[in-house]
Length: 134
Length: 499
Image (cartoon, rainbow over all chains, first blue to last red; front, side, top):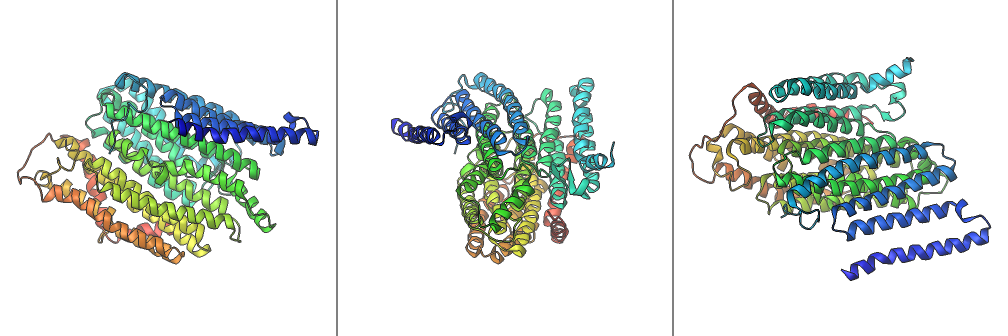
């Protein structure tokens, strides 16, 4: 378990290093950090990796769902950042709103199902709700 | 309203009828209650029937073949929408006679199935990333709930949770992929993305690693819906736990929608240009290898199964592998073979459709009447229900791909396309797989006809008009499956469904 955690943390470390490198570049390029596209992409990359790490390590259904929310937020940050810096029109902003709404709808369905699971199994631990298998 | 807007609405007439049917069934449910469930069902089927009739109106397209700039209304969409609507109707019909679902939840089941059909039929016509995501979620959210529709069954809740967890992760990753595709190309429109990529290729600026990453992330979501190898884990568990009509829905409607949109995505985004480029080659190889692994894995694991729904679940994974061969041919081959690959995929989808709805329908009948779910329970049932068991054998033969069924012709075309597209090894793998498939399909047939005591068990048969109609649909499907020349109708239809 510890080994998998460490291996999962490895991309995180490299992402942090990347942030520092980008920060160093920014000071050279003289543009403020918040006005550079790469800054947003790095943050969204970190969010994505955090989301995937949450999904892979957590056994509680709610935490796994939170992991998916992190990935969706990473996508949203990308959409908004590309819309701001890419001069692509408003499609990205629109998509970001759509994603926020979809995430809310998905959570409503998800919580209903998780409640049912708690009622039937007395637990929302994904390793305990595993009656169907080969 | 302006004429363009009217044309746009005409193009989505089938979907409008589905929305109307959803509203009508929800409202009718308030008035007629549990006793009137056949009335609610008839209302839903009337809506689906009207949608099917309106399909040909929309095929001509609204303003230049698109509706609202979001949907491409072409022959490809019409083909898949027809399959999806027919599947939705049959699932509603089978849902009305499925034992094991409480009567109190049966009325709400119907609009939910219609919602799944609506999402699926919008998905196969989506020409825009926003529309693609929205319709995919409409399809997913209603099928998560449907998988858990049997309130008193723990297995059903578990199926819903598993489908939800895997599905939420896959769709989140796909959304992240969309954000990258949009960032790299600057357009949400699939054909526009394709044109920009083609221009990049012409300008010696072929899409690089970023685009490969983005495409792989998008494919995670689509492959999950289609239950292709590394994203198939949900399929057997969900197929076993969900109520049988819902299993049918997932195996046919959801899978048709996934392949419909996958083919459209591949065609619009990657095949817009004339010049083949490196990304295309590598994607084609990834898809071809995944197709081979998916069919082999599905078939070999199916051999070990005893529960018939689970066995058919693994078989549907294997069929996702066969269907993926068509996509691989599209990516690897030249223009002529790409068309061949796409048409053989469409044709194969139609033959898979007939046999899978039929096989799950027969499994539902045997579970309804005899409470039989495992191959052990199936022993000797042919003596009690000879006609349904005979139909089951027809469907299993078609799924195996033996003559004289449409499944044989479907496999033949797929192998031919794969051979012509330069993927000879894939054709060989697929034919070897058919041998493995023969073993486990025959296992079910042998249990029905050759094992157990040769006595008649009455079971608890259904009486009434609606069950008769529902089970008669199985024989109609069996007739279409074994009627050899029907495959000509299907292949002509597939060839007349251009993108």
